[in-house]
Amino acid sequence: MKKEFLLLAALIVSSVNAQSTKKVDFLSASLKYCVKQTERSLKELKGDSTYNYSLMHDESIRKVAENYTHSLEFLSRTSAFDHDLGFLVFSSYGNGYRLTGNPTYKKIILDTADTLATLFNPTVGTLLSWPREVKPRNWPHNTIMDNMINLEMLFWAAKNGGSKRLYEIALRHAETTMKNHFRPDYTSYHVAVYDTITGKFIKGVTHQGYSDESMWARGQAWAIYGFTVVYRETKDPRFLDFVQKVANVYLDRLPADKIPYWDFSAPDQPNAPRDASAACVVASALLELSTYTSDKVAKRYRNEAVAMLRELSSKRYKSGTKNPSFLLHSTGNYPAGSEIDASIIYADYYYYEALLRLKRIVAGQPI
Image (cartoon, rainbow, N blue to C red):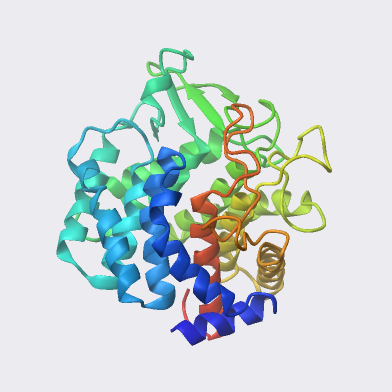
C-alpha cells in the first residue's frame, strides 16, 4: 500500500516522493502538537489519522486513529450544540467503520445521526447550524453552507439501519439550501437566515467571507462537495445539474494556479491570503463529480482537480519541515483574524481523500 501511494504521488507531481512516506509517520508521531490548533481542527484530526491508516496500512497509525476517534464517542450521547456532528463523526467513525467493520462504530454513527436530526426545523426545512448565534446575532434559524457536509452521515444512517426520516431530512435540507442559499449567478451565501415561525428566508449574509455579497472560497467549496454527495445519494438529476453550475462559477473565477484567494472578492489580490483547504475540498469533490458527468465535462473536472493537486503538492504548498502538516497556506476565518495563512488539518484530510480518489480513478476502480 505504501508503494502504491508513492506511485500515486509521483503521478500527481514528481516532487512528491519518499519524503511523503516519512511525513505520514512524522505526522502520526506529532499528533499532540497538531491538536493544539482550533477545537474543530482537533476533532477533524480523528478522520485525518484514519486516512493516514487508509493510505499506509500502518498498525501504529491505526492505533493512534482509534485512540483519537474514541474521544469523540460522547457526541453520540450529548444533546446537539452545533451542526458539525456529521463533519466530525462521519470523517472519523465513518472511515473507521468502512475500514474495520466494527459494529460499535456503526452504532455511534447512527446515534449521532439521530442527535443531528434534532436540529432540523420542519417549518424552515433545514438543520440549525449555530444555536449559539440565535440570540447574539438575531439569527432565529441560521443555516451555514458548511452544513451540507453533514448530510452524508444522515443519508448513510438512513440506509444502514437508521430511521428513514433521516433521508427525508437530508433531502429537504438540500432542496431548501438549493432554493435560498445561492444568488442568480450560483455563488453562495455563507449563512442563510430564516424566520422560525413562517419558515421564510430572511436574508443571506457572511460570517467568514469578505462581504455578504462575495463568494467565500471555502463556502463555495462546501457547496460543490455537498451537492455532489446529494446527487450520489439521491440520483436526482436536479442536483447534478445544479452542482455543475455551482462548480463552474468557482472554476471560471480561479487564479491561474488554481488555488483560490480566501474570498474571490478579497480586495488585496494578488497579495491576499490563499485558502488551500478550499482547493483540497474542491479537488476531491470534482473527482467524484467527474464520474457522474458526460465525457467532456468529466475530462474538464478531472484536469482541474489534477491541476489543483499538482499545485498543492509543489514546494509552494508543502510544509516540508515547517510543521507536522502536509500543507501550508489555508485560511480559517479571515474576518476574525483566525488561522490566516495557516496549516489547517481539514485541508490535509481532503487532500488525502483526493489522492485516494485519483488513485482509484487511475486504476479504473470506483472512488
